[in-house]
Amino acid sequence: MRMRAWITGALALGVCVGASSVMAATKEEVAKALAAAEELRAPEFAPLHYEKAKALFKQAEEEAAKDPERAARTLDAAKLAAEKAAELAEQFARAFASLVEMRDKMQLVGADQYRPDLVARAEEQFRKVAEAFEDGEEAVARRNEKIASDLIKAAQVVAAREKFAAPLGRMIAAARKVKAREFAPKAFGRALAIKKKLDKLVKNDPERQAEAHALSEEGLAYAKRALGIGELGSRFAKTPAEVERWVDEEDARLALIAKMFGVGSFPPDADAEAIVKTIQSQLAALKESYEAEIADREQTIAQLQKQLAEMNERLAQYEGKAAELEKQFAEMELLRKKLRIKREAEAKIKQIGSLFAPEEAEVLLTPEADVILRMRGINFRSGSAVIPPAAYALLDRVLEVVRLFPDRKIRVEGHTDSVGSAEYNQKLSERRAEAVRDYLLKRLGDAAAPAIEAIGFGESRPIANNETAEGRRKNRRIDIVFVAPRVQAKTEGMQTGEEAARTREE
Image 1 (cartoon, rainbow, N blue to C red):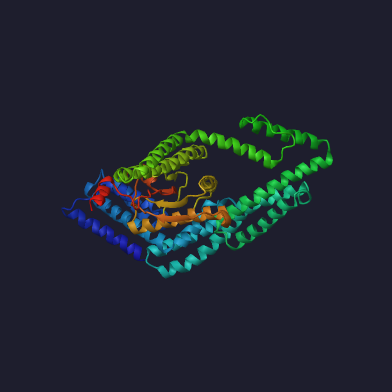
Image 2 (image 1 turned 90 degrees about the vertical axis):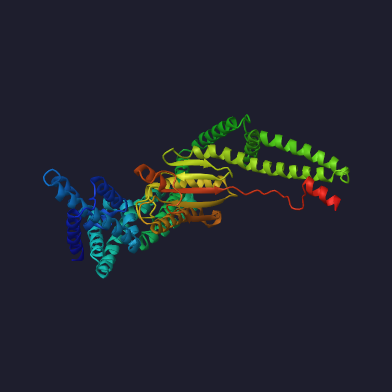
């Protein structure tokens, strides 16, 4: 096979290098080449070359004490094999991107817990695809790809059914036992409809895990509501006196809310609308505390406006001064608007910080008042744009941040480290940004979906040193940017004092 021939050639080249005066590879260089290959998933995508490189490296270590020259030649061959493994792994990730992501989804959804036999067969077939590609037999690799895809899909169906559909089915069954169909027909009916849609999706397209998760969460919310109402209705039907106790409990909850907002208490006959209005008035009062500095600015602006009015009365004599004052007013107005935007962002950042643990996300505020949510908890696999199911809950909390900024545009940015070619990293960053954007849009729904842009920056914007593993980990990131409205001064038609003076002279 071609791969074996290449390895033989590599060893021959190692002999030539050892016989010449060319500097041989060091252990550190080989270790670095192996690490780079591992980051590109060579053990999975180019197993023959990677395993050969590892074996040669181990052989060189054993030969070092007995025959240093031979060890040097073996190190050269190991470095060549590792570099070739990295090159082939990157090529494989491009050529078989769909298969790679299918397999990642199968693994990440935990298919081996439910059908280990199918997963083992799928993994065996995947390796055949990789080995055929390594040997330059792409036609054979494509034939094996079809078999691997079918096995992976079968395993995905079972896993997706257990992970997404089964919990909803159990919740619906529990709701049915407490007569939720009778006491909560709307919520129960909605849960059933979503379950039907979810079952169809899992059967026909199990790869759409993010969408399956979104449907499962939506269905669980309705089923949980139906269950709660059903339990309450069943309890009331069995023990009518429970109605009064429930009302007392609800009154106690309202009293606690009233105390939190400092309104004493709500009247016993207060309806929901009146309660909401009371709470809104208290929120408005709290908001005033954030606007003290803005109020000072507005007072300054009012004084400038008064001065401007006085200056306008003597405009014929003081055209230059009026223009300067008008400019100052515009600048102060611009500053006030920018300050308001920044203060509002700062207030919301405190809320955002409470939603995430430090290892999950970092919140940053730019000088332009853009809010950056740096997602530390989304750990993509190398070469893959599959969102790990473990990150779904994290992204669901991002939805709360989206709702905090209803008027801001959102930009999802993908960034990578520098391992692999720049073109490869650029495409990968774009796919990852698009995956996160699509997830957010599906969870928000068409009605509530804001404008969300996805853009990839590849390796062009590092925030840490790519020479270290920790630095590369930091550079592999998703940033969700909530773009602040850009405020511009209205200065058209204004003149400076010098310009006004020239106009009078003319």
